[in-house]
Image (cartoon, rainbow, N blue to C red; front, side):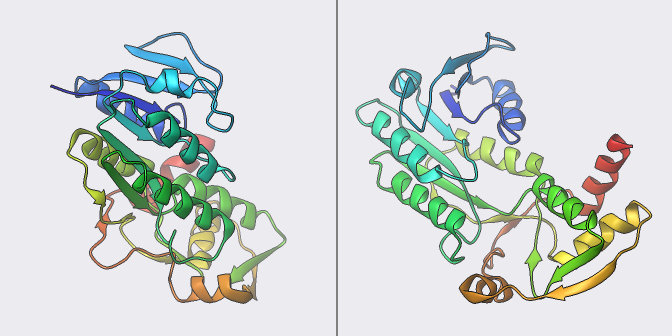
Length: 256
Protein backbone atom coordinates (compact mmCIF):
# COMPACT_ATOMS: atom_id res chain seq x y z
CA UNK A 1 0.00 0.00 0.00
CA UNK A 2 1.37 3.42 -0.99
CA UNK A 3 2.22 5.67 1.96
CA UNK A 4 0.69 8.96 3.04
CA UNK A 5 3.29 11.57 2.12
CA UNK A 6 3.83 15.16 3.20
CA UNK A 7 5.84 17.20 0.67
CA UNK A 8 7.50 20.46 1.63
CA UNK A 9 8.25 22.68 -1.34
CA UNK A 10 5.63 20.79 -3.32
CA UNK A 11 4.73 23.82 -5.44
CA UNK A 12 8.33 24.58 -6.50
CA UNK A 13 10.39 23.55 -9.53
CA UNK A 14 11.02 20.05 -8.22
CA UNK A 15 7.81 19.59 -6.26
CA UNK A 16 5.60 20.22 -9.29
CA UNK A 17 7.31 17.30 -11.00
CA UNK A 18 7.31 14.91 -8.04
CA UNK A 19 3.66 15.24 -7.01
CA UNK A 20 2.10 13.76 -10.19
CA UNK A 21 4.49 10.82 -10.03
CA UNK A 22 3.50 10.01 -6.46
CA UNK A 23 -0.18 10.56 -7.21
CA UNK A 24 0.12 8.08 -10.07
CA UNK A 25 1.64 5.61 -7.60
CA UNK A 26 -1.51 5.89 -5.47
CA UNK A 27 -0.05 7.97 -2.64
CA UNK A 28 -2.17 10.20 -0.44
CA UNK A 29 -0.43 13.57 -0.74
CA UNK A 30 -0.32 16.64 1.45
CA UNK A 31 1.68 19.70 0.38
CA UNK A 32 3.03 22.26 2.84
CA UNK A 33 3.36 25.84 1.58
CA UNK A 34 3.46 29.30 3.11
CA UNK A 35 0.36 30.52 1.28
CA UNK A 36 -1.86 27.45 1.04
CA UNK A 37 -4.15 26.53 -1.83
CA UNK A 38 -7.53 24.96 -2.41
CA UNK A 39 -7.44 21.16 -2.76
CA UNK A 40 -6.93 19.98 -6.32
CA UNK A 41 -5.95 16.83 -8.24
CA UNK A 42 -6.50 14.82 -5.09
CA UNK A 43 -3.82 16.77 -3.19
CA UNK A 44 -4.38 18.44 0.18
CA UNK A 45 -2.62 21.78 0.61
CA UNK A 46 -1.80 22.99 4.11
CA UNK A 47 -0.35 26.28 5.28
CA UNK A 48 2.84 26.42 7.32
CA UNK A 49 6.12 28.27 7.65
CA UNK A 50 9.36 26.31 8.06
CA UNK A 51 11.24 29.43 9.11
CA UNK A 52 8.97 30.27 12.04
CA UNK A 53 7.48 26.82 12.66
CA UNK A 54 3.86 27.90 12.26
CA UNK A 55 1.61 25.02 11.16
CA UNK A 56 4.41 22.51 10.65
CA UNK A 57 3.43 20.08 13.42
CA UNK A 58 -0.15 19.99 12.14
CA UNK A 59 1.07 19.37 8.60
CA UNK A 60 3.22 16.44 9.73
CA UNK A 61 0.44 14.80 11.73
CA UNK A 62 -0.70 11.57 10.11
CA UNK A 63 2.02 11.41 7.45
CA UNK A 64 4.04 8.21 7.09
CA UNK A 65 6.72 9.71 4.84
CA UNK A 66 8.00 13.28 4.58
CA UNK A 67 9.67 14.43 1.37
CA UNK A 68 11.56 17.62 2.22
CA UNK A 69 12.09 19.64 -0.96
CA UNK A 70 11.67 23.19 0.35
CA UNK A 71 14.80 25.26 -0.09
CA UNK A 72 16.16 28.62 -1.11
CA UNK A 73 19.23 30.86 -1.10
CA UNK A 74 19.18 31.06 2.70
CA UNK A 75 17.74 29.23 5.68
CA UNK A 76 17.80 25.59 4.56
CA UNK A 77 19.44 24.58 7.84
CA UNK A 78 16.79 26.45 9.84
CA UNK A 79 13.95 24.89 7.83
CA UNK A 80 15.36 21.38 8.35
CA UNK A 81 15.74 22.00 12.08
CA UNK A 82 12.14 23.20 12.32
CA UNK A 83 10.86 20.20 10.40
CA UNK A 84 12.86 17.72 12.47
CA UNK A 85 11.54 19.24 15.67
CA UNK A 86 7.98 18.72 14.40
CA UNK A 87 8.74 15.09 13.47
CA UNK A 88 9.63 14.02 17.00
CA UNK A 89 6.93 11.72 18.28
CA UNK A 90 4.91 12.12 15.08
CA UNK A 91 5.00 8.54 13.83
CA UNK A 92 6.70 9.46 10.53
CA UNK A 93 8.67 6.43 9.35
CA UNK A 94 10.75 7.90 6.52
CA UNK A 95 12.29 11.33 5.92
CA UNK A 96 13.62 12.01 2.42
CA UNK A 97 15.80 15.06 1.74
CA UNK A 98 17.17 16.65 -1.44
CA UNK A 99 20.64 18.15 -1.04
CA UNK A 100 23.40 19.26 -3.40
CA UNK A 101 26.52 17.53 -4.66
CA UNK A 102 29.55 18.96 -2.89
CA UNK A 103 27.68 19.94 0.26
CA UNK A 104 30.51 18.46 2.33
CA UNK A 105 33.35 19.79 0.17
CA UNK A 106 32.65 23.26 -1.25
CA UNK A 107 33.40 26.09 1.25
CA UNK A 108 30.52 28.35 0.22
CA UNK A 109 27.78 29.45 2.62
CA UNK A 110 24.90 27.84 0.70
CA UNK A 111 26.70 24.48 0.56
CA UNK A 112 27.44 24.71 4.29
CA UNK A 113 23.77 25.31 5.04
CA UNK A 114 22.80 22.31 2.91
CA UNK A 115 25.29 20.17 4.83
CA UNK A 116 23.89 21.43 8.13
CA UNK A 117 20.41 20.48 6.90
CA UNK A 118 21.69 17.00 5.99
CA UNK A 119 23.03 16.65 9.51
CA UNK A 120 19.67 17.66 10.99
CA UNK A 121 18.00 14.96 8.89
CA UNK A 122 20.54 12.30 9.84
CA UNK A 123 20.23 13.17 13.53
CA UNK A 124 16.44 13.36 13.53
CA UNK A 125 15.84 9.89 14.94
CA UNK A 126 13.62 9.16 11.91
CA UNK A 127 14.86 6.64 9.31
CA UNK A 128 16.10 8.79 6.42
CA UNK A 129 17.28 9.04 2.85
CA UNK A 130 19.32 11.93 1.38
CA UNK A 131 19.95 12.46 -2.31
CA UNK A 132 22.60 14.93 -3.44
CA UNK A 133 21.89 16.27 -6.93
CA UNK A 134 23.75 18.55 -9.32
CA UNK A 135 22.47 22.00 -10.31
CA UNK A 136 19.30 21.82 -12.36
CA UNK A 137 19.16 22.81 -16.02
CA UNK A 138 16.84 25.65 -14.99
CA UNK A 139 19.45 27.19 -12.69
CA UNK A 140 22.21 26.71 -15.26
CA UNK A 141 20.08 28.40 -17.91
CA UNK A 142 19.44 31.39 -15.68
CA UNK A 143 23.18 31.76 -14.98
CA UNK A 144 24.35 31.55 -18.59
CA UNK A 145 21.60 33.86 -19.80
CA UNK A 146 22.80 36.53 -17.37
CA UNK A 147 26.40 35.98 -18.46
CA UNK A 148 25.43 36.24 -22.12
CA UNK A 149 23.70 39.55 -21.47
CA UNK A 150 27.02 41.20 -20.58
CA UNK A 151 29.03 43.10 -23.22
CA UNK A 152 31.97 40.74 -22.55
CA UNK A 153 31.51 37.09 -21.54
CA UNK A 154 33.32 36.34 -18.25
CA UNK A 155 34.72 32.80 -18.24
CA UNK A 156 35.91 31.56 -14.82
CA UNK A 157 38.82 29.20 -15.40
CA UNK A 158 38.34 25.62 -14.26
CA UNK A 159 34.70 26.07 -13.28
CA UNK A 160 32.77 22.98 -14.35
CA UNK A 161 29.20 21.77 -13.96
CA UNK A 162 27.19 18.67 -14.78
CA UNK A 163 23.63 20.06 -14.97
CA UNK A 164 20.80 17.62 -14.41
CA UNK A 165 17.20 17.80 -15.47
CA UNK A 166 14.64 18.42 -12.72
CA UNK A 167 12.47 15.69 -14.21
CA UNK A 168 15.23 13.13 -13.77
CA UNK A 169 15.68 14.22 -10.15
CA UNK A 170 11.93 14.05 -9.55
CA UNK A 171 11.75 10.47 -10.79
CA UNK A 172 14.63 9.45 -8.55
CA UNK A 173 13.05 11.13 -5.52
CA UNK A 174 9.69 9.49 -6.16
CA UNK A 175 11.39 6.09 -6.25
CA UNK A 176 13.26 6.85 -3.03
CA UNK A 177 10.10 8.04 -1.25
CA UNK A 178 8.39 4.75 -2.09
CA UNK A 179 11.37 2.62 -1.04
CA UNK A 180 12.86 1.82 2.35
CA UNK A 181 15.12 4.39 4.05
CA UNK A 182 18.61 4.15 2.56
CA UNK A 183 20.76 6.85 4.20
CA UNK A 184 23.02 8.79 1.83
CA UNK A 185 22.40 7.38 -1.66
CA UNK A 186 24.61 7.84 -4.76
CA UNK A 187 24.79 11.34 -6.23
CA UNK A 188 22.60 12.20 -9.20
CA UNK A 189 24.19 14.36 -11.90
CA UNK A 190 23.59 15.12 -15.56
CA UNK A 191 24.89 13.00 -18.44
CA UNK A 192 28.19 14.91 -18.83
CA UNK A 193 30.51 17.58 -17.44
CA UNK A 194 30.76 21.03 -19.07
CA UNK A 195 33.00 24.00 -18.52
CA UNK A 196 30.98 27.08 -17.63
CA UNK A 197 32.35 28.81 -20.72
CA UNK A 198 31.17 25.88 -22.85
CA UNK A 199 27.65 26.18 -21.44
CA UNK A 200 27.55 29.92 -22.09
CA UNK A 201 28.95 29.54 -25.62
CA UNK A 202 26.30 26.92 -26.35
CA UNK A 203 23.61 29.35 -25.26
CA UNK A 204 25.06 32.16 -27.39
CA UNK A 205 25.36 29.92 -30.43
CA UNK A 206 21.77 28.78 -30.08
CA UNK A 207 20.68 32.43 -29.95
CA UNK A 208 22.88 33.39 -32.88
CA UNK A 209 25.02 35.72 -30.78
CA UNK A 210 28.71 36.22 -30.14
CA UNK A 211 30.65 37.78 -27.28
CA UNK A 212 34.28 38.46 -26.53
CA UNK A 213 35.57 36.18 -23.77
CA UNK A 214 37.25 37.46 -20.63
CA UNK A 215 39.07 34.80 -18.59
CA UNK A 216 38.65 35.35 -14.84
CA UNK A 217 39.87 33.50 -11.78
CA UNK A 218 37.77 32.70 -8.72
CA UNK A 219 39.94 33.49 -5.70
CA UNK A 220 40.35 31.82 -2.34
CA UNK A 221 39.19 28.48 -0.96
CA UNK A 222 36.03 28.47 -3.06
CA UNK A 223 38.03 28.89 -6.26
CA UNK A 224 40.37 26.05 -5.32
CA UNK A 225 37.41 23.79 -4.51
CA UNK A 226 35.71 24.46 -7.84
CA UNK A 227 38.94 24.01 -9.81
CA UNK A 228 39.44 20.70 -7.99
CA UNK A 229 35.96 19.59 -9.06
CA UNK A 230 34.62 19.38 -5.52
CA UNK A 231 31.20 20.40 -6.86
CA UNK A 232 31.13 17.41 -9.21
CA UNK A 233 29.64 13.99 -8.54
CA UNK A 234 31.68 11.33 -6.83
CA UNK A 235 32.57 8.05 -8.60
CA UNK A 236 29.61 5.70 -8.77
CA UNK A 237 27.07 8.49 -9.21
CA UNK A 238 23.82 7.94 -11.06
CA UNK A 239 23.33 9.94 -14.27
CA UNK A 240 20.20 11.60 -15.58
CA UNK A 241 19.11 11.06 -19.16
CA UNK A 242 18.09 14.48 -20.46
CA UNK A 243 21.01 16.49 -21.81
CA UNK A 244 21.71 20.19 -21.52
CA UNK A 245 21.41 20.49 -25.30
CA UNK A 246 17.93 18.97 -25.28
CA UNK A 247 16.81 21.26 -22.47
CA UNK A 248 18.32 24.34 -24.12
CA UNK A 249 16.64 23.67 -27.46
CA UNK A 250 13.24 23.20 -25.84
CA UNK A 251 13.61 26.22 -23.55
CA UNK A 252 14.63 28.55 -26.36
CA UNK A 253 11.78 27.34 -28.55
CA UNK A 254 9.37 28.20 -25.74
CA UNK A 255 10.93 31.62 -25.14
CA UNK A 256 10.81 32.47 -28.84
